Length: 429
Image (cartoon, rainbow, N blue to C red):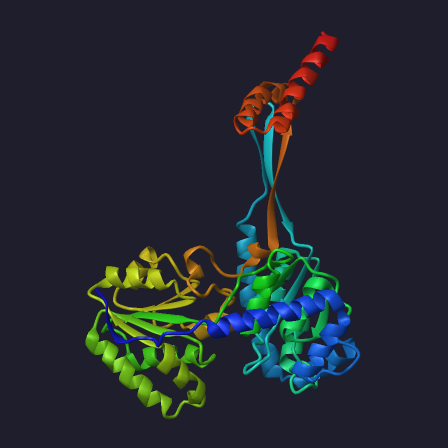
C-alpha cells in the first residue's frame, strides 16, 4: 500500500498532439525545401539572419578569450572526469573471434559511428556540460566526424562558454542553430552540414519530438523528455537536504517531476514543509514552485522493499538514496537512469561532470535502457567464416530450417552449397 501525502496533477495530452503535428510539418518543410526552410525558421524562431551558420575559428578564438581562467580549469576537470570514465567503459568492450565448431569461426567487431551531430540546448539555461557528455564522449568512442550545434542567444551567436565547451570537447564543426531546424539540418544535410548518422543531445519538447520523428532516418541517443528526480529517504536523512535536492531538479522547468518515496510519514511531511520554506527565497522559485505544485509527489511506504518496488515502477531518470541501508538499495534497485548513493552524492554532480553521463532516460524508459555512454557511439557487428567442409556439413540443417519456414529460395542457397562442395571433393579425389 502507498499513502500519497501529495500527488501530481493529471496532465492532458492534447498539447502533445499539437506539438507533434507542428514538428512534423517543420521537418517535412525542411526535407522538401532544404536550406530555405532552415533559414526561414532560424530567422523567425532564433532571430538569426546571418548568411553563415558554421562558426569560424575567429569566433571560437573570441569565445576562448571571453571565458575566465577559473572556468577553463573547472571545465578541464569535468571533461577529464567524464572522458576518463568513458575510456574505462570503452576498454570494457572487446572484439573477439572464436571457433565455435569444426571449421566454423564467428567474430565480433566494434566500429564507431561515422558522423554524429551533438545538439546543445540554450534556452533558460545554457547546458554547457552537455558538450562534454556528447561531443567528448563521441570522440573517446572514436567517431571520426562530430558536428556540434547550439542556438544563438538573442540572435547574436552561441553563448561563449558553450562555444568554448564545444571546441574543447573536440567538435570538428560547430553551427549556430537551434531547435527543430537544427535537427532537420543535421538529418537532411542543410546549411553546410553533411547528413549525419546519429543525433544526440537534450532539448525542449520540440527538440525531443523532432528526435523521435527522425529516429530511423538517423540514430538517436534516447528520446529524453522533461528531467525527473526521485529521492528515496528514511527518517535518518536530513529533510532540508532532501528538499534542496528535489527543488534542484524542479528548477529545470514547470514540467519537471520531483518525487519523494519515504518509509516515514513524519519525514515526508517535514520535507514538504521544508520545500515551502525554501521556495520563499529560492531564486528560481517561479519555475521550481510551479513544477513542485503541479508534478511533485510524496509517497509513504511501509518498508524498504516497498520503496524499491515503487521506485522501480517510476523508473526515474535521476534516483537519489539517502537511508540507513544505502548498500541494500544499491544492490536491489533495477530501474533508473543514474543512481546517487548517500547524501554525499547529488544529481548536480552527475549533471556537470563527476564522470558519469548526464543524458539519461526519462518517462519510465529506465525500465529498458540506460543513458548515453561511449557504447552508444559504437556499433557491435558480427561476422562468420566457414571452411568448405563446415559449410557442406551444416547446409542440410539450415536448408531444412528454411523449408520449415516456407522460405524456399533461402533453402536453395543452402542446398546449392552441398552440391557445390560435393562436386569439388569429387573433382579433387
